[in-house]
Length: 208
Image 1 (cartoon, rainbow, N blue to C red):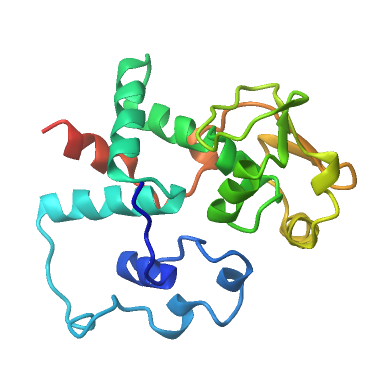
Image 2 (image 1 turned 60 degrees about the horizontal axis):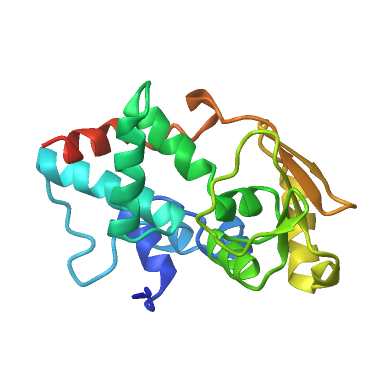
């Protein structure tokens, strides 16, 4: 599978907002958005007007980058969301939020979604007592996620969990910091998710 090897901070600058791709760095003054809030490249500071298609494309790219997905992966999730009952955009965000790598990140076991994927791949995460090493695994409400006993001494997990505890956890998950264990209580409502995401633009883009 292809990997993005360039600076992740460029992705935040390209979208014009923090995507929280670099863990703790994103919460400090060293964040690239704080220093240079314009897109990267020699023409980055030139402002141009985007077409309707351009606006839709940028929003899709932003959401893809937030959750660390490639185009093929994102399209598969969108098709599943489109086939479900209810509002397609809401279904899309709930499926993205229910991915195991995202839940591990929100629970503070990884400082970023990329690090959370690595932790999962290294067999450090248990779901309902069973080892799961698939980052795209869909967690269902009521599932319990915890760090494997052998991995609880890893400094990166301890540090990340402490930082997440200081910032606070979303209302739809419950975390026992000392036990390094959490519960996915329910799917998040749209009002609980960032207002900077406009999923309807993605639906318009893929509906053409």
